[in-house]
Length: 470
Ligand SMILES: Cc1ncc(COP(=O)(O)O)c(C=O)c1O
Image 1 (cartoon, rainbow, N blue to C red):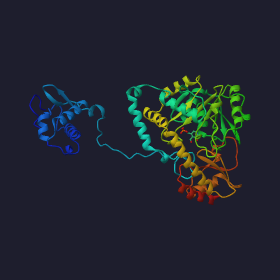
Image 2 (cartoon, helix red, strand yellow):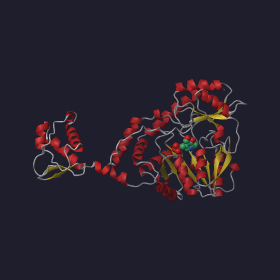
Image 3 (tube, helix red, strand yellow):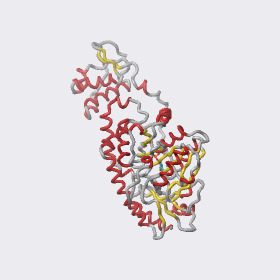
Image 4 (spheres, helix red, strand yellow):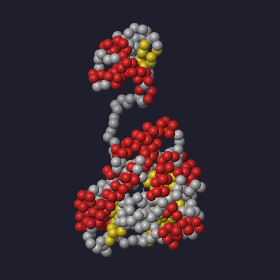
């Protein structure tokens, strides 16, 4: 190992990498010489003056490359004694010792969860991510990050970035008729995250949690996991049958805008009855507003939460359905009295949305890009819905098609759901039988049809196959 002031006798020929970019090329060539021990630990690098002559680059270029190597811990620079390779190079501090024979097997993707693949006819409740303007999103993320600075990235905001909570409350005031403030909003990774927080925080083993029947199965499962007794309440043409609610319960979970899966809208009289019940029973009402942005025939009713003068409603919304499913951002609007407890659970699990996505969304909402996307996707989904309905033979009954991302196709008398779905599967169609959503009720045979994540051509092609099965 060479020590002292003697110049390195190592031969460092002019590297080809210099032709691509001088400073980066010089840095890469020197780093590679260090890693391959051509420049061993303790050896002295040639002076920038001699190397500049040999490599035909400026001393400034080499000075910058040496500084970068110094900044990353490859070399030490001591005034008067030149630049030396460090005894321990940074790779040895940050990487595990290399395995004898590094093996990298191809990653097996997780099998898609049954019933949730996009672009498979007619998988329900999937948005079409290809309608989303990725370039606009990338610009929003970069603008958001650059404007934020390290302070925002370091600070802990368990309930979500204040600027995002403000944007969400502005949106909910204008579009869902809710009088909510930013400090009532909690940013989540989606509606299921909100339901999980509610279940963990507000339910005790043995509590009664009322759900719609038929209804959204994950909600039932999450309430059961928390030890609650799930009580299934039938759904009528006006939504949840409020006359069937028990005298006491800890909560009732509802999908008022477009009942999941029947697609009916909770009528105003049932909304008021539900809120009266919640006050009498001292229960929470959990409002899942999962696809309320998409209305095809008329303006939507305001959210149930907008009528909540007694602060009984916990509202859950999501960007995963209207932007793209992989985004994983949603939100809750919660009465002030339960906010601290929900935040404690949230902090405990450490399960929250990254600052980058939150900053991107602040820009996306604030710039008007979000509402533009809603307008364009609503238009596209309406055309897809119309194309689907046009494929179906006369006399077939469809419901719930006035809104949302799916509708219900009622099967002709005598046709069994299981048999129909099996025949559909043979024709390449993936249909969900209504029976899968039922707890205690028995309903006439029907299937759930999603149309939003399919192109018009796919809908026409597969719609013909569906019609032939009826
Ligand atoms: C009724 C209902 N609520 C919530 C969700 C899930 O929302 P998120 O992905 O935001 O958890 C779905 C998904 O299909 C749904 O159908």
